[in-house]
Length: 94
Image 1: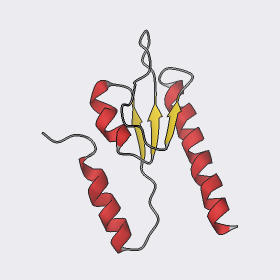
Image 2 (image 1 turned 180 degrees about the vertical axis):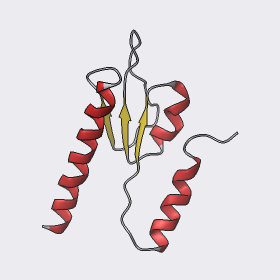
Image 3 (image 1 turned 90 degrees about the horizontal axis):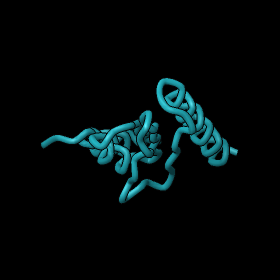
């Protein structure tokens, strides 16, 4: 079994070796996305029509749940994630 989170560990290792900052943003709307979302730094959850948003048993520090379903919901959470990343970057550089 290879879950969607499988690449995260490799990315983290590569960036640590290169001494570069890395923020993994995961996007998901279905059960098969849960492991990847839980292993992200920022989890972006998009609800599906007629279904409640995903519940993460082991959520990362930041979870963003879109107020709308796809396709608008994808854009909502992407904008929020970018805003969080930019704000944190400003805090560390300022």
